[in-house]
Length: 78
Image (cartoon, one colour):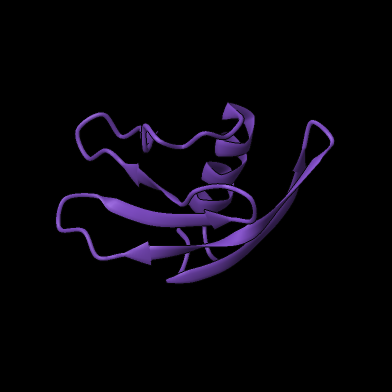
């Protein structure tokens, strides 16, 4: 899993996304705040019951971009 802070830069469908994500204190989930240039910030978290990643309802971003962020967050740290 991701450490406390990580920069993000990736391309989805020809669009460049830049920003960062940061682990935030949450007693109930593994939660990350995501800040991308040109977008409102949003959260992504791992639901403990379903073991599925979720994103804030206000994440007005391409679902493929959210999937890319989740893939980067959920990679094991080497």
